Amino acid sequence: MAWITQKSSAPNDLGRRAVPYLAPATKDRFERDFIPRYPTRRGALIQVLHAIQDEVGWLPMQAMEEVAQFIGITPSQVVDTATFYEEFFFKPRGKYTLWVCQSVSCEIMGSTALQGKISEKLGIHHGETTPDGKFTLMHVECIGACGGAPCALCNHKLHENLSSDNVDAILDSLP
Image (tube, rainbow, N blue to C red; front, top):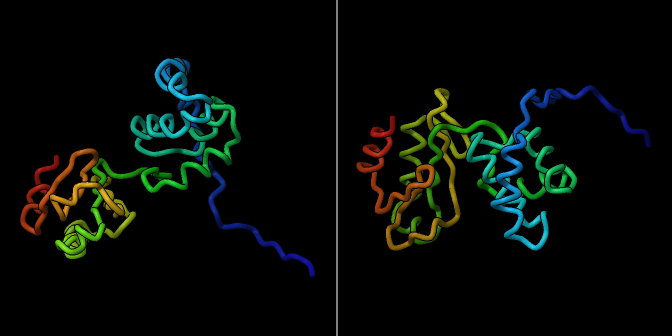
């Protein structure tokens, strides 16, 4: 049996930029702040990826290639690790990332309706970003704030005891 191939419609432009994501000062900071905390360089991988995403807003392929070289592993190992975790983004996300908890506690307290309300208000679904680049909507299995269910994170800020009314106020208050 022969394989029949066809030209891929997938984009092959990796969006490379001339300025590296891991500039010498960034590498020095990682060497000083992250690498000594782990028994191997690979142990610092997730922390390095978080630091880059915090700075850039997402993880471009070029950045992951540079991380692989810095850590001393293959780019596929970096991508395998990053794609395992839901909190890493591989395309630009909104200025505000909303993580709505969907744990059992939050679901019992109305998180499904809350997710629907947010989705309707913003005009996006799970994993999408508003056309203006302001919001990205995500679901998360558990935030760990069951006593304040339903809850959500807006970037790194926890919001508990959410309702249709106060979620509107929260979203409307963000610049």
